[in-house]
Every structure is written in structure tokens, then in C-alpha cells.
Length: 112
Image (tube, rainbow, N blue to C red; front, side, top):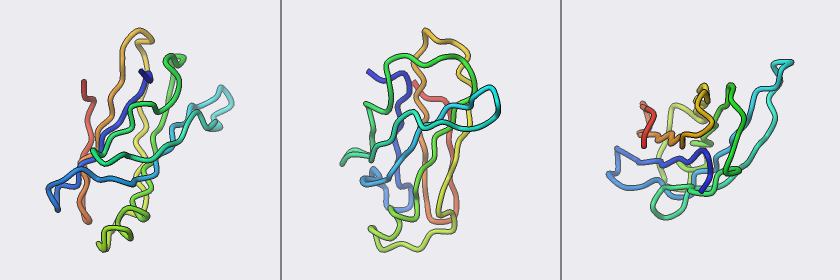
């Protein structure tokens, strides 16, 4: 399993958000971002294989291309892209970063 996974739920439609392009990046020592992995949410709104099974400690970010999803689901969204930056501090733990999405709001948290 990937060290980092995600799950996107469309709270406006009450269903998983399938087809959301997602990127995972790591911050380098010089404060630049390096692409680690990319994927697209499946029919259950999940990406279980986003990146390697182990990542180094440090800042990472997940970017959700919500414009592509909203266009495909005939919705007009306010946030064309959502970026969640988080600190991976425990290299032995799994990190799950879910996104609850609607056209005019979003919420995220550290899941399990």
C-alpha cells in the first residue's frame, strides 16, 4: 500500500468523486516541489496506490484538479484546484488525506 492515500467524496451529490486527477509532491531542501506520484480517483473516489510505500519525513502536498471533476459532472465549481500541504513526521505511519468536496466548499482531515 502507498504511504499516502486519498479519498474524495462529493458532498453535494452524496457520492464518491470519481475521475479527480491528483498529484503528490514532496518539498525539497531548497523549497522547491518535486513530483512523487499522480493518479485519478476510481469509481469509489479513492486512490490507494498514490506513490511509494515509504516516503521521507517532511512537507508533502496533494493537489486535487477539481475543475476537471466539476466539468465532467456538469457542476460549476468555485475552487478549480485544491492543494493540501501536510507534514509527514512519522515515517512508519500510513497517511490518509480525504477530501470532502462541494462546488463552493471543501474540508479535509487526517484519516485512517
